[in-house]
Every structure is written in C-alpha cells, then in structure tokens.
Length: 308
Ligand code: CP
Image (cartoon, rainbow, N blue to C red; front, side, top):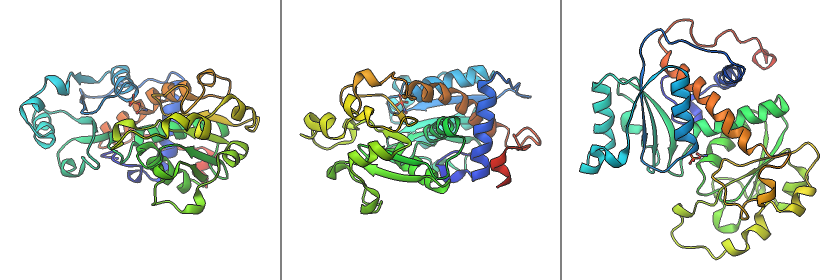
C-alpha cells in the first residue's frame, strides 16, 4: 500500500491484516523502524481526533514528525497544496497525512515520491475513520457478514458514511440508512432508507453521524426537531437489541444526534472508537512506510477470515 486515499486502495485481505496489526499494537506490540522516517500532518480543516491520534501514533512508532500548522505556513502566502507537498518531498519527507476541504485533493499528489494518507477530503472519504470503525465492529462481533448496520443522520455530507457504506457492503454487512429527506444521498437506493423505528429495533450497530453544519448552505429549520425525529433518545435506546452497540465518529452534538446520558452508556463504543483510532493509525503508518521493505508487512495471516 503506497497511499491510503479511499477504502478502494485496500483489498479485503489488507483490511483484515490492518485490523490484526492494530489489535496487536493495542496489546502492546512495538515496532522499531529500520530507518529514520519523516512524516508531516497537513490539516487544512479543523480536527481533534484524527490530528491528535496521528500525532500520538507517529510518536509511539518513533517517527520524526515535522511540525506544520497551516495557519503559520506559506499556505498563508498563497502556496498551493501541490507546491507544499512538493516542497516536503524535496526535504525527504516520507509520508503526508492530509485533511483538506476539497474532495479528492490527493489526485494531483499521487505521483510525488512520498505516501499520502487521506485524513478526510471534504464530503468525500475518511478511510482511517472507516478502518477504526471496522476494528471496533470486528472487536465486538468478530465478523461483518450478516450484521445489520444502520447509519443515521446527515448521509449526504458525510465522508464517514461514504467510506463505511462501500466497505461494509463489500465485507457482507447489510447497510441501511435513516435520514431526513434533505440529507439523503441519492447515490443510494430509496429502499435502503428505513424508518427510525425499524433501525432502532433491528440494528446490530446504530451508527450516528454528526450534523455537518459547516457544509450546509443555509441553516436548516430541521435542527430544532432533529433529536425528537432522528436522535438516539433515552426511550429509543431502551428498544435496541440487548447486544447492539452505538457508534458515532464524533465530535458529537450532545442532545441532538444522541442524548447526553447515552454518550458514555454501556452500549456506547464512541470513546472505544477513538482509542482504536490510535492503534489503527499506527498500523496504517507502518504499512505505508514499509511498503518497500520485504517481510515487514503483516503477511503471515493465520486468522479464520483469511482462509475464506
Ligand atoms: N472523527 C473525526 O474525524 O474527528 P475529527 O474531526 O476531530 O478529526
């Protein structure tokens, strides 16, 4: 794996291999790079979880992290993303983690002699969020095949929904949506949308999405009624299956997508997702940096799912 731009960069085998490696990092496995690797995090959009977990992951792996803040860089003098990336390539940086408001920002960068890890491109894709979500679901159920996973909320503007839907369907999950009419994504079938009542009663994973206020052209009157119509209320949580879990990529609009009392309830995996993000990002960084080192990738897969 040279780049991680979208989940399409990963085969099923690579996905399971990354989950296995992330779980090993979580259990305390260490990795010592056999050369000095330089990494830079370029965040052109706000982030807490993705930016901080990549930074912790990079330090845990002993990588050399070049400090870079868009607000104090030559981006302020009008330097383009390509010229910024080309400059860092000239300095010998091996990998860039990039979050950018433009969809597919990575297209002009993919022939540079460094690896690109997409930390979120506009409404496009968020592959490391998707991988940490897969890790969280796999830890819970040990499989994806046959699970009912319902993604609820602002489907149209959500890169998390886009990345997760494609890969979860590929891995055999039954993915459904609940969304207000305004936030339905027309690339999905109308019959893939179900009612909130059905979602709550039948889902193994209730995956809530943040309302992407910053991507809406106008303030939506719907917000006032959202919690009542589409939010996970205390009453709805009581109707969930005993083994079902709650996920949300965060940040959370408490009292809107989810009742504040449920954010840390027994079935919530929201903070587990954040913890898993650290270990998954360690696995991703190791994988892109060792792409040319024979034998350092996790190729000795022995798990049941690899035999399938
Ligand atoms: N889930 C997620 O991407 O969070 P941040 O925007 O804080 O990185």
